[in-house]
Image 1 (cartoon, protein in one colour):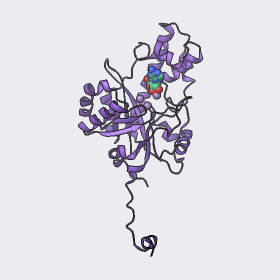
Image 2 (cartoon, rainbow, N blue to C red; image 1 turned 90 degrees about the vertical axis):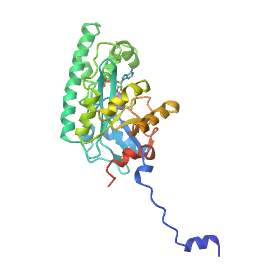
Image 3 (cartoon, rainbow, N blue to C red; image 1 turned 135 degrees about the horizontal axis):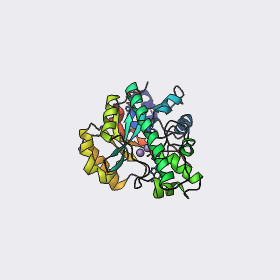
Image 4 (tube, helix red, strand yellow; image 1 turned 60 degrees about the vertical axis):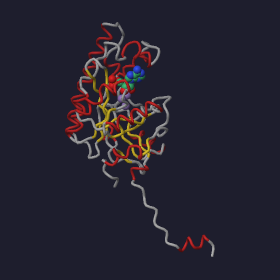
Length: 295
Ligand code: AMP
Ligand code: MN
Ligand code: MN
Ligand code: MN
């Protein structure tokens, strides 16, 4: 009898299915036009699906409006982990972003706190545009920025676009270089602190992850953030490799932190397609094991 025949008759043990989270292709850091991304949430879901992303988190700056917009419209083959990216600043040390993931869903604790943060964000822009007009003499009004927003978040990204469109600067990058980068005084840093964001995410029953941590800050800031309750750091991201990646992995292990990852895709012209960068579930399996298994 041929070997093939024997193999057919012998009952082979069933290939054990690996846990879902070890194989899934993930992108846990993506923006829509509800904050400063280019595209509406439904389109982002469609692109994620066609880019073969299997687990996606939309993490707009300071808002979960995208989740309200797409309720019940998830394409087959795609799962969502509710998320947000909260902008914070440290006294004199610049900005720091904290991602929150909410496997148990988005609750009113989170919504109410984000509403307050958005009020502060809008005030910061109103005052900042006032300073740019008054102190720098730029022909700009708050409404020029507001009309470029598609959701509840008004950001320096919209402002930069307004400055390009009005011919005030030659390019989007120039807007940051010349006027609105954090080295300039016109647009103030967010008022939320990293500790407040971590605490909010915990109270909202979420998981807090330091987004795109800067290596020069890791040694100085990580222990303090862990003491404040930080759950993890975003280890995997576009253009993070070699020594930088090794340092982030080591820092996560040393502090027993969860590892997160995502592309920080905004979808503007010239960006990679969604799905060009993904994280293997295996790389972030501890984080995924805390998330509700898929139905
Ligand atoms: P905001 O949340 O209002 O502080 O705006 C920050 C957003 O502007 C970031 O999330 C980026 O999308 C974009 N941004 C910040 N700094 C730069 C920069 N130097 N060059 C280009 N885009 C930037
Ligand atoms: Mn952004
Ligand atoms: Mn960020
Ligand atoms: Mn981001």
